[in-house]
Every structure is written in structure tokens, then in C-alpha cells.
Image (cartoon, rainbow, N blue to C red; front, side, top):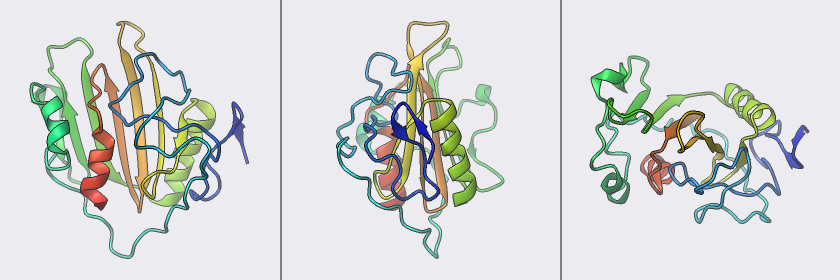
Length: 199
């Protein structure tokens, strides 16, 4: 098993990932200072001392990828994004994709850095494991196993502006939710998507 900073990286199975690593915040809830791979606090995450629950094997009926970027967010999260444009053509192709994935781009094209992009795609266990291993081992992401899935995340200081950037990934049952953001971090964002997909 590989390690980084005293915490185990993603194991050969997504079950029992990173026992003892501190939990991190929801994507969209930066701690106010860059973590640099450290583990920010989160109210919806398991306690740092808890052992993560086993990740289930993919279900026989795959969860459908949604086609509406607003429908996957709670009213509380949408209220935080009420003044932010969604899928502006200036950002290129967004919304439902030809391969069945969904790309949601929240941001004003006139802003220098503020924005949030989420991609929901199908990804089998092997490639997901490779991706999460790389992020944990090489890039200092903190990973844990909430909501019957596997979550890895990291925040850092923007190189040009005095704002926090970050990335959060959540994998479960063959679906990957991958969110990258800069200076736009709605509280409960990723958890809202998880609830919309799995209940």
C-alpha cells in the first residue's frame, strides 16, 4: 500500500480507502486558506478517527446521468448560484454531451477567475482507481469514503489572484463527479449532486 504524509493512498479496492486520513469539506466549501493537500474540515464527512465504510460494487442497473445542471442541485445551493450564469456559450460546449456525460459550467465569462465546472461521466472501477491513486500519491489530494463512494479533494491558492481554487472528485457505482472551481464554492454543492443521483 502506498503512503503520502502518513495516510494510505487509494488501496487496490476502493473499499477501505485512507483509514485515518482527515475528512475534507464539500466541494464548494473552502476552508478560507489553501490546504495544499491537507484535509479541510467538513460537517458532512466521517470523523477522522472513523474507518471508512466499504464501497459497494456497481449496481446491475447503472444510475442515469442527468441532463439538467440545475435539477441536480438543491434549492439552497441554487440560491447561492442565483446571480451566476450557467453554461454561457463563451465557455464552449456544455450541458448534455454526445457521449452521455453532463458538463455544467457556472461562471461569468467577463470574470477574471471566478467559476465552477462539473463533469459527470461514466468511469469503470479500474480507471477510477488509477485516477484517484495518482491524485492522492502525486498531487496531495485528501481522500475518504463518504456516501458509499470515494471522494478526493484539494484546495490551493490561485497563482495570480488572492482567491482559493480547488478540485473535488466523487466516484460511486461507475459514475465520476469531477468539479474544479476558483473563487466560487457553494456550500453543499457536491453533496447535493450525490443526493440527486443516489437519494
